[in-house]
Length: 245
Image (cartoon, rainbow, N blue to C red; front, side):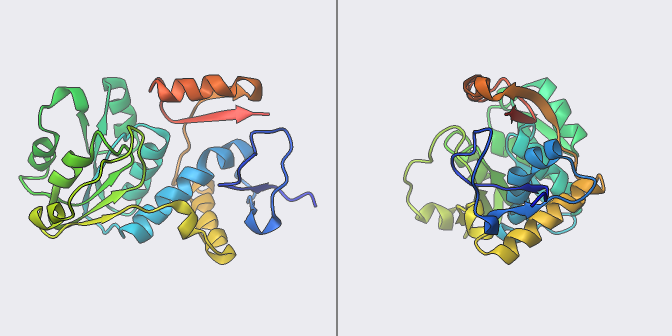
């Protein structure tokens, strides 16, 4: 009673009050306020499992992050940089490119400025393909993501912001250089309480020590949550949006 807590992936919590099983709650440490926790827990733990488990990023890895100025992209870019990796990001506008660079991206590609995204990625990496691509966009970037990889590279497809990837022949993975494809989901990486607490604690400690910054760019009262979704769908936003009951 009285503990400050947060949670993720609990349906029905667009509300002033919510009932959540205590086994799915995580404690918030001193030094991390409610807004920071609300802004970081879902995307922070997603980024954490992506760079620690889906593909363990190594120092000096050069990594492609799509939509690097979005709420997810900014967190992912920071964590990769924190681990010593080098980020090539993609964005849709020069303003978003500036945000990605501030988060640590070494290079940023505007989708509209290149005809061949994979060729530009390789040019920025000395003509070589990458060990991994983190792709939360899906349909619109899938082909370029595969083409950006080196032999035995890894495509981590963790989202489908532009729509689902159509069915494809797995022989493409062999033809591309014995590539691997993983389609992970956060729920499978916080399946038991010990893993949930460990992952949440790691992320919240990064926030507490300022190693990970949360970028809240807009706040909406709960009554205007539909507008928050419209703004997301129209790609008018950067960083993290908060809905306040």
